[in-house]
Image (cartoon, rainbow, N blue to C red; front, side, top):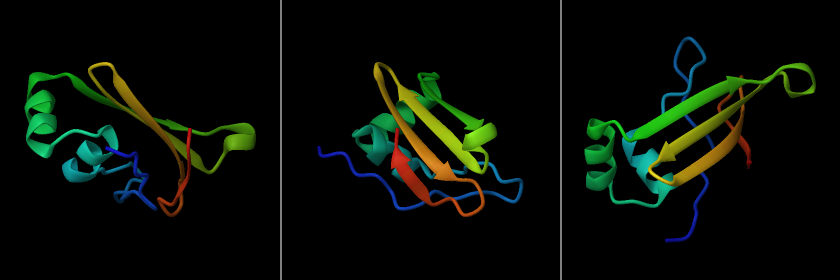
Length: 85
């Protein structure tokens, strides 16, 4: 499956990333059912880091499932994906 980066991610009222399961599964290149099973089993993790200094105004989203990880740099104000990292 080819990697497809979303144009934007959803941000909740607090400015935190709210990634729908379908989008996370697609980013990791796995079927939704497999993703959900792994999520329930506790082998899917995400980390959001807020940029500081020259990276202020950005978020770095790291999504991990087993040995696979994807990292996106996101504009904190809009959720626009600036680039995969």
